[in-house]
Image (cartoon, rainbow, N blue to C red; front, side, top):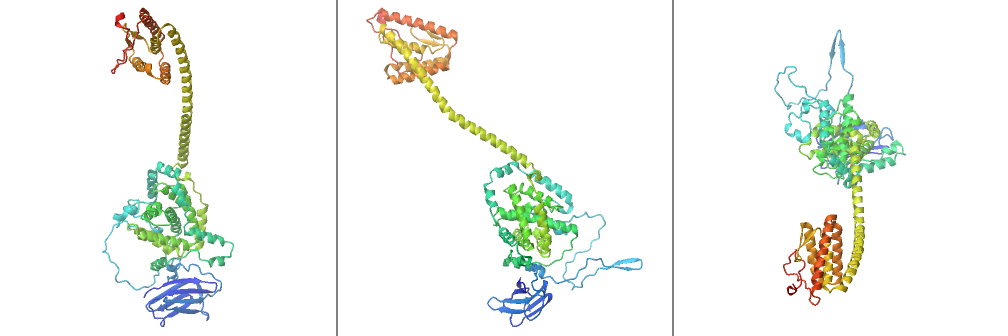
Length: 607
């Protein structure tokens, strides 16, 4: 028999069942319904449903067949008009046969002995069951295996999957590692993985993160519609469908094998907290990739969920949030606390929308893991069981869970990474750098003004120096010829040197090499001054004044320089007075100038 595709809808008075049976004989079909049972048969299709409410046969029932689409549409009246049938989109739970279960222990007392009777429904024996040879085992010879998976119902799985172990989970040997040790190892691994530089980079340069935070997934719009109907009655609000399953998702629901989970109170607590952890990781993945899937989607979901990656069993909602926040700040590409708070708010919305929204998210996670080779193991350990279990969960439980999650606060100080201290220190460093840059800008702005003031002072001093030198040269023109002007310029140059030595031929030798080089350069310029315009002379005087300011002479050397200068001047004046008719000529600078050659004596005939 083939189980056909089907879907159920309702209005206040009728339940509508749409069954797709292509290539079936429409003339040969049977429909049976009574109370909560519904059965349909049209060769080769068979459908049996256990409805969440009672229906009645009162003559208002109606059935029709669409030959183009190959679908039967059956309308059945409700026994109680206006009653809302909850969970019509939980297809896997609807396919389950109705069974009577009792939680009471079946014990029969006979005399002084007690016999425990286990009542098991008789089923046809499976002759093809796998057989394993019997092996005797001694007590305490086998190590204790710790449980994990959905409701901690699995153990020994990874002993057979050692090759895929490292690609799926972070814990090395989960079968031999107790829950407390897993938690200690997880916290140590997260602390070692945390990178302050990466966190601060995302904290200050968060343009990409702020962009993805603006993305609105499908549950935001659905939650907004549900919130808009808060003022209406419960029945009117229930008639609206906020979550719609695709045909692919419906097909996946029909493929699931229906199961019943007998969980104690502690196991149910772990299952609910694990559900929050998985949804948080899924919300981060949807937000960061803006609803698109990529090769990193499987890694993001399982890496950020300690339930999937470390087989963690949480004890409180706050522990779940802290674990998720720490892993977001340690492992993915974008490590920002705003992504943690966004995932928390999204998870609250999903839980408030009810088990249909939770189931839709779990089906998407199941598809992501199914398309990734090593991650399919997590479907067998967790996701498939969650998809089946959530269909039978009461909506009141999810509403209470969302309320508790919404009331739980999460701060940066809870992460254990000293995030607030890191941010404060980084802000101080940033402010200091900004202050230094501002000071550098101000100094650069002040530098040109100071340079202009210096140049103005140099111009004024050079102007006064030129006036003084002009008056001196005028006095010498009254007593000597034009050659005396050159001697005055030479004397001015000589004042700039430190301890000059002048021989009888007019050659000067300086004891200080660096100062002689400076004076030599100025001597070369002075030899060229006889034929240059007045503007160049003023520029030379400015350079001379600057050199005088930079090099200060000691008092002893300065006095010696003055004495030698006076002697040189007397010698020159004596030679020029010997023959007033003779012409005192200077040697012109040769192509290869001698830096020590400054001036030569007058004509040899006069000597």
